[in-house]
Length: 124
Image (cartoon, rainbow, N blue to C red; front, side, top):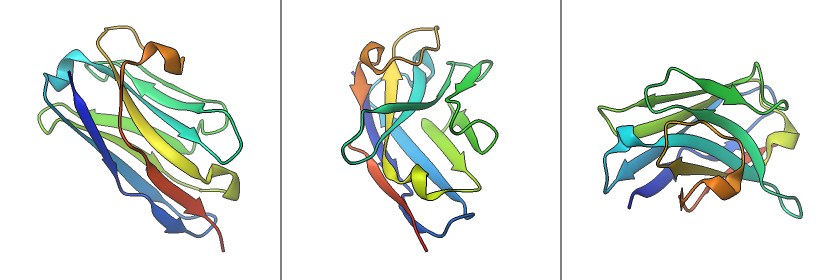
């Protein structure tokens, strides 16, 4: 199985930027499609972005399209989420997830491996 550890969260002002990282270990990272999800207090977990094994395909949730960019470096076994133009409604715990498949999907139930999450707070 693959182990995932997120980092890079923190407190940022509205309009600011953050880059989240997700370090993978345990299995061949390039075998996994990867995704980012988030969960705010009292809300359902929400799809943010996903990327295929070779970075050839990406998809984004409507609320982050045009502001967030998902990427990966298979040589470094690391997934990234560049978040720009942050809004207070982006405040949540952000999770990376892995799926042993070539298919990029948005449903959290189809991801078999999850990190512990990193808190992102957007506030002035």
